[in-house]
Image (cartoon, rainbow, N blue to C red):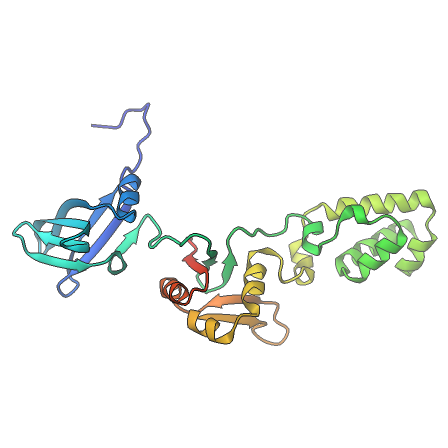
Length: 276
């Protein structure tokens, strides 16, 4: 029967747990709804069954979770045979992160190459955020001059304004020579420029390396104890080669293994592989 056109089809059992036994060449995949999965993770006794295939033959197998008699994860055959006994750590879980991160930890996404991104931190949307410049703090020529000294892209922008206005070659001299009305126009233009998104192709090298999720992850781990970094498998990269602009913290081991280390040492961090 086809799904009703008024009721969109959805996968009602999105979480799967695959278990193998024997020499690893036989196993079964059990599927659960998210509500059932929450009950399992909460420690509730739960059981289900499915078909297992081996050498073209199928057999009915059952799974039990959190059983006082059989343990955290047990798979048995219809003939009462014991096929598998272990924990969810021994299974392949898809459709849900397992184990879930403990409360209060700082979470990092791991890119394919190992680069870490701090969860919850976004790239700056405006130049004001990127350069930590409050547009309202720019009120006179001195404010513009001091801001430009620490922000080369702003200096370029002001130089372009000076060139269009036909001012003297020196930006500082030009700003200091402007009448009040013309200066207010320049300040208004700079404030508007700061509220725009950075031109990443031109300005990326001048935006502080701590800006955005990659920079936040680097800043987070930069001053950590070297023994903890080594145990986690986190490497600090500050330029891959002379002239490189790649600065990052990288995870050089499996995220699940790093999570186990973090839990054992009480480090308060959690890693999850970023999905493509």
